[in-house]
Structure formats: structure tokens, C-alpha cells
Length: 257
Length: 263
Ligand SMILES: Nc1ncnc2c1ncn2[C@@H]1O[C@H](COP(=O)(O)OP(=O)(O)OP(=O)(O)O)[C@@H](O)[C@H]1O
Ligand SMILES: [Mg+2]
Image (tube, rainbow over all chains, first blue to last red; front, side):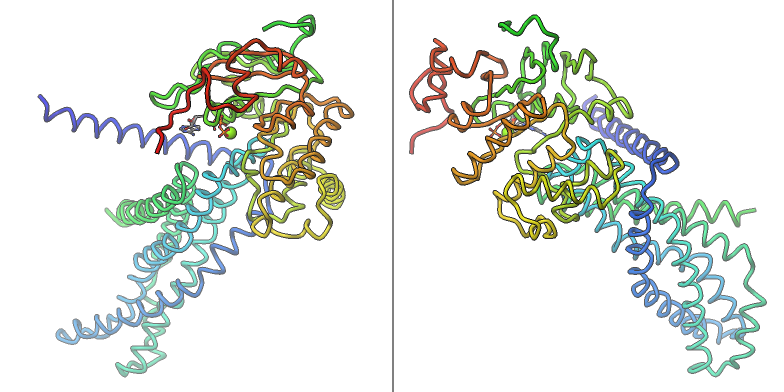
């Protein structure tokens, strides 16, 4: 059956890639928890991921909050249900849009630059040089990035939540004639701890996925500039897809009954 | 293969080492002994697998078969802490220097001291600047980034990094390529000094036969994945090996056929 052969081959190479990624993840995680640690490098990555992503994540959040308020107004107006707008804004932002959009923006910003940096180090033999200087590249390059991604994304998302809700508030009060005090009260009444917590759990997972994909594709890049380019693309694409997949499953975990 | 030094245990003992990339066989059953305190040179055409041989010994590439012993300890298949322990014995100058481009020059040189040996930064910096001075680079160069250096300067920084930890075994992959003749001689002397004064064992690669005669005690020639000749460098002119003769005299005619077609 010649038709089964390519299917089988694709399936095998998929299994192989999955196995390789799993092994990479296990090794990387084991180096995150075993000394020696490099606190200086962790802090540098935290600044890189957390601080420098603030503008792009903040802008994404504010416009998302604003457009959410506007769109739900045009929809709810028909049923005279405008009072649900604060609810819609805060729940969509904290549960879904905050973590997913921040994750996607960070994938584009941080995941790409990690893949490019580590990939360049690979093809210029800098990773080999690290090895010969008895410094484990997993410890020195990968663990600090994973730790920084895991910890900084929840903080970024928390800020994005606040900015996003503020965006909705801005449009509702300035354009849609909401009473500011009522809007805030409704927001506070509607939001539940679980909404925010699920969003932050998602953020931590996404931060891990983005940095993992950046490191994995960079570390395994081959060839020259072209190989690094491919690694960068793969890092961003795979991180984005994984974010959307995991988003569904974490949502199911938290909210499906 | 054995010679006068065979009564000592080798520092590095390579047996039946083979390595292929896909269909392309690069090393095919290589045997070589390197004894403590000697300086061995590997010569061979471009692309004959000299750099691959060095990387196999360092565990950067995994050989397909064969055995490599360092101080009597098998290193093929070694991983993690054990491999790091072996690697602490080595210093390596990469062919293209492989400097860390996110660190300054002195941090590059001090890297093995700070990360590998856990020395304080201030002390490591002092040692790094001394090593830089030994390769003819001043303190001002120490604070530059690798991207700001010329090719020859990068090579010398790589050399300083390789010797900074005063390792037992040092690999030099084309240490003088890209240097002017005077600096080439300075570097040759530095290599000899490392071997003679620090008692290091050296394995070098070079295409420069004048440099070869200055820095090495023994020479091995790699051709088609095999070591086809090993002997004292002083006797290389009397090797009676047509391949070696052709190589060291740099003639296009001879048993070694280059894969080129005339224009
Ligand atoms: N990572 C790799 N993947 C695939 N092939 C490789 C790899 N590294 C080396 N090779 C191949 O192995 C052969 C030997 O390479 P090597 O770098 O050892 O040559 P060399 O003897 O050091 O040459 P030169 O004197 O030009 O530096 C080359 O033909 C090269 O194409
Ligand atoms: Mg080479």
C-alpha cells in the first residue's frame, strides 16, 4: 500500500519530534531546580521579558478593553442589556483575552529573539564553547529564560488585566455615558477570584511555552543564517499554536462542569 | 603507530574512532595516542575531519564507534557531571574563535575562571588581562565587545580564553591562521611556552608548516578518515610517505587528488 507509507513516515517523524521535545523539556526543567543557579542571568531575562514587554502588552490590553466595551454595547443595546458591559469586559479580559493576547505578543517579541539569539550561538559554535568551558548550556542559557518566562508572564497579565478593564471603563464612561461609580461597582461585583486565578495560571503556562519554544528551536537550529531564520519562525508559530491549544484545555479544567 | 614514548600511559588514547555525517564518512577507524606533556600536530587537507576529531574528543560530537580515553578514563558516552569533570581538563581554541558575543572581551577570557572554577570576578579579571597581554592585546581591548575586533584579534582572544584556566590539555584549531607572520611567531612561542612551562599536553591543527615545526613534537597526518602517518615532526621531511611529502611541500601533483576541475 504505497499510500500508507507517507502517512506512516509522517507519523513516525511526529513521534520522534514529540519525543525529542519531551526529553528537552525534562532536561531543561531538571536544570531549573538543581544548582548551580545564575541569579544575575535570571534577573536579566526577567527584565527582558517583563519590563520590556510592558508597552506592547499594555497597548494590546487597553485597545482590547476599549473595543470589547464598544462591541458589547452595540450588541447588548438591542436587548437593553447594556448594564452587562462591565461584566463582559472584566470576565473576557481576565479569563481569556488578557493571557492569550499577552502570550501571543510575548511569543512574537521574546520567543523570536530567544530563538534567534540561541540559534546564532549554536551556529557560531558558542554553545560548543560553553560546553568546553564546563558550563552547561541548559543551566546557563535555558533555565534562566524558562524561570523568567514562568514568573514574569503572570505579572504582565495582571497588569494587562487592570489596563484592559481600564480601557473598557474609559470607553463606557466617556463615550457610552455610563456612570463611573456604577461601572466600577459592577466590575467589582462580577469578577470572581477564579476568573483572575485561571488567567494567571494560563499566563504562567504560556510564559513557559513561549520561552521553551524559543529555546528549543534555537538550541536545535542547524546551518547558518537561514537555519536561524527557520528556528525563529518555528518558535513563534509553534508557541502561538500551543498557546491557543493549552488555552482551551486550561479553560476546560477550570470552568467545565 | 608506537614509537619511543610507548612505555608511558597516554594522556589521550583514541582507538577505532569513526564518525560519519549521513552517508559522508569523515573519520574511519582513527587510532592515535597523545602522551603527557607532548605537543602533537594533526595535518591534513581542508575538510579531512581535523576539527571533527577534536570535537569528538571533547564530546561535542558523538562518534559512531570507537573509544577515546583521557587519563585512562573512557569518555565516549559520558554525560552530565562526569563529562564536565573531564572537560575541565581541556582548553579549546575554536577555528573561528567562537567568542560569546554578548560578553566583553575580558569576560570571555575570564569565563572559565568565573563559571567553571567559581573565582571572584575581580581576581578573574586580573588573570584575564594578563592572558590578553600575553597574546599582545592591551587592557583597552579587554572592555570591547567581540564584534568590534578584527579576525586576528578574535583568534588571539580565543587563544587567551583557551589557556586562561591553565588546563592540562589544550586544543588549538588553526591558532595562527589569519595572523600576520610576526604575531604568528609570537603565538607559536606562547603555545610552546604553555606546553613546556605549564606542562600541558597540546593537540594542534595547522596548515602552516613553518609554524608546525616550531610548535610540535610529533605530527599525524589525516587523509580520507585515516591517520596515514605519525612521526616526530623533525623527521617529517624524511617520512618516505608520498602523501606527506606532497602535503608539506604543497604540490598540486601527487597521490592526493583535489576534487577540482580546471576552468
Ligand atoms: N556538523 C556537521 N554536519 C555535517 N557535516 C559536517 C559537520 N561538521 C563537519 N562536517 C563535515 O565533515 C568534514 C570535515 O570537517 P572538518 O571541519 O573536520 O574539516 P577540517 O579538516 O577541520 O577542515 P579545515 O582545515 O578546512 O578546517 C567536512 O567535509 C564537513 O563537511
Ligand atoms: Mg577545521
